[in-house]
Length: 285
Image: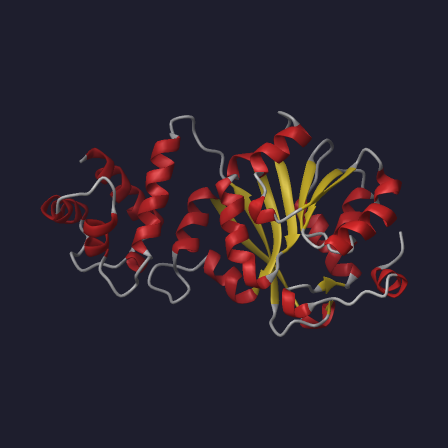
């Protein structure tokens, strides 16, 4: 396959940075991202937004099967023409928006009931958080993800209670797995150059015990969402007005006191463990 620069010239293609398109051009960074997936024989990869296929080709030439979801029609046409013929049977390309894709259904149709899939992607900065939540929504299909994010978004994944970056994303990702910072990537490695620094992270998905019910999981996520919905309001006030089924304020105050929470505590002060304790007590009332 031609290089990305050669493809840009061949197809007279302009990359639209204002739409979040930033092609990773540095071969060393591409290799490091694929190395970080730590792929084992038989494992499969989902790629989010392959662009012109730089990371895609690195994975395919190592012998692994890959399914890519790409929104841009021109990129899809180029990949189908330039890359797909060389990797027939290994490369599957879906034209569509990752956020509108039922990943559980798509991956089961593609990979069957085999080992969990690993995900990789250089996420568009302006929708990276929604994509992270979308992956979490389909978490049971994945064992690991290696993702490139805006550095500021990556910081939110490991922020601690009380820190400015701590929020719904911090708690939710910690519930589903563990984030590890790998390395930062300079704007000079992209075309066009973004205005921000990028960071590559590895997220290892947690294997849940069979006792974790879908209902409990849903209620926990609802609690976290409510807790960070209005940062200026106390958690007690938010739960009294927003949690369903509706809880009596006196019952909520008693739960807070039993757990050792201040009645004026806010969501950003609670750790994952404290949210789990609170979720359990709310379900018992």
